[in-house]
Image 1 (tube, rainbow, N blue to C red):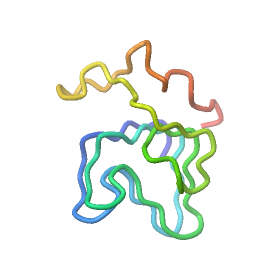
Image 2 (cartoon, one colour):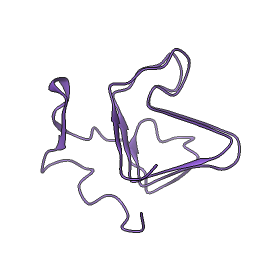
Image 3 (tube, one colour):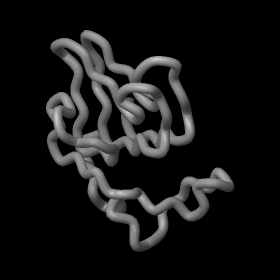
Length: 99
């Protein structure tokens, strides 16, 4: 998954935004304001899961986790489903051009 915005989703168990099980890669992706009983924004289990240059929370224990940040992405109007980023967003220019 590259260059995606995943917000306001839910899961009955874990990984309300992204569920990575025994492989998969998430790059340059915002996964924020999702809900689940466990691991609200992301879940990663087993080898092969990779998150790089993502904006999500928490970032501790994030598989690979290179360049990831855990700041509010500052959407224009998240409650009104406008997920464009404000100019002051910490996500602006925080990704990698490799993806």
